[in-house]
Each structure stands twice: as C-alpha cells, then as structure tokens.
Image (tube, rainbow, N blue to C red):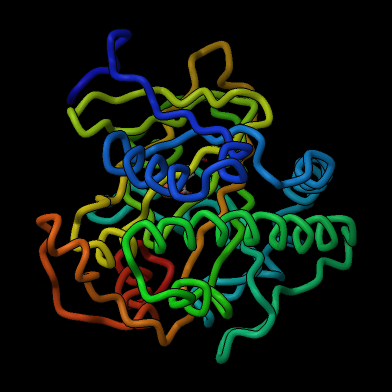
Length: 312
Ligand SMILES: O=C(O)CCC(=O)C(=O)O
Ligand SMILES: [Fe+2]
C-alpha cells in the first residue's frame, strides 16, 4: 500500500469570493482542481457557520441516545436512504469487513417512492438542524455543480434542472471510540462516492485521507470553516472519466485519540432519479470514454446493493 508522504502534491484551494469576480474563471479552476487532485478546499462558502455548529451539537446528542431508540428510525426497506443506519450496516464496495460507523440520512421530502426523513421525537433540534443544513449545503453544492456544467458546455440550464428535484442526502456520521483495535475493519475503507459531488465540512478528529492521482495518500486537514469538495462516480460517468471520482478513506485513530468519537457530515449531491448519466460531448472531445447511458435511479440501486445498504 502506498504510504502518505510529506512531499505529496498540495490540494487545490479556491476562494468562493472569486466566483462573483469572474464566474468563468472560477468554473475553470473548479474543473481543473477536480481533474488534478479530485479534492478541493473552498473557503468563503455560503453555508452558515451557526447552522454547522447547531448540527454538530444536535448530532452528538442524537448519537448518544440508546441504540434501541435510534434503531426505531432504521428503514432497511428503503435501503437506509432516510433515517438511521446502525453500526456495521455499510461496507465499502468489494470489502467484506463492515465500516466502523453509524449514521443518519436526511433527504428531500418530495422524492417519489422514498418516505420523508423521520422526525426524531426525542431530539427535535436534530430535525431542525438537519433540514436547515441540508438546504444550505444543497444550495451551495448546486451552485458548484451548475458552474461545472457551464464549464463543460452543458446546454444552458440543463444541470440546474437536473438538480431541481435531486435525490441528494446529508449524512450525519458517528465513528465510535475504538478502545480495542482488533480485526480488519477501519472507520471507512477506501471507496469512491456514488453521487455527483460530495461536500464535507471539517471534522474535529483527523482520519480522512484522499488518494492523489499519483497514488499517494494525502491526509485532509481542511482549514476551519472551509468545505472540502470531491468528485463522485456519477460525475465520473457524466464526464466520461474526464473528472474521475476520488478514492478516499477514514483511517483508524492514533492510540491517544482512540478513546474519542469522530463525527462528520458529508453532503452527497445527486441529480433527479430520472436524469440519464451519459458522457457529455465536450468531455468526449477531451478524451473521455462513453459508457452505456443509465438513469441515476438505476445506477444508485446497483451501487446500494454493492455496499450492503440494499439487499441483492
Ligand atoms: O467521515 C468522513 O470524513 C468521510 C466519510 C465518507 O467518505 C463517506 O461517508 O462517504
Ligand atoms: Fe466517501
């Protein structure tokens, strides 16, 4: 396995304030950064800090509830796309050992065949914070994705429309303390995200690493208040591989941090379920390779089976 390296290439950093100054250039920088390192740090984003902090507080108190209480909110029949996913439910594609995490999914309430996010009666602040943060992250993620669409010469408004009823998900994650470090499991084994773009807000505890295109694992230590953005498999498919999805993982803590939980909150931007993932002509001109077109819904179902959230 490739080790992390102090001499590794730097991760692209962008300032969202530059978007107002030069939209075209910001879009180009975004696409270039995603192509080069696949992970980008963006400062001066539009997600309000008070909503981030309210969510962090509410998440800590939700995950502290008894497991029987949390499990009432599990929705295996809906492939855990809303509500609670117990510890050990998800494993990365092609990994036998489950990841060492429990999580909660907030989604849009208007997606056909998927129920709304269940309200947690024991913790109303968790619901309020979840919906507020979903909206704020959705708004920012959509702005970035429209900028990518414009840069890649998508038909004007096509990307905006595809995201209008996007099947996106805010995932609130808890990795419990690890007093005993046994077995093959890691907090999150190396994987690529399924969706178009992922937004991550700085976790307090270390552990997130990205595999640079050169094969080197880089530790991600986002500046406080910045958001980290990475490309997922749907964007890879839409761009014919011109923007490859980024392999990443969450490694187990060092011995001194092992008694501590790790909390994080990735936002997965998805298009509407009927959106067809098909390589853009501009990307084919850049050397991309087209695969068989597939709807976002069918692609998601295939991938949920691979990671154990849907039964085959
Ligand atoms: O916890 C993190 O920092 C990353 C989580 C992640 O990669 C995922 O849930 O897909
Ligand atoms: Fe991920």
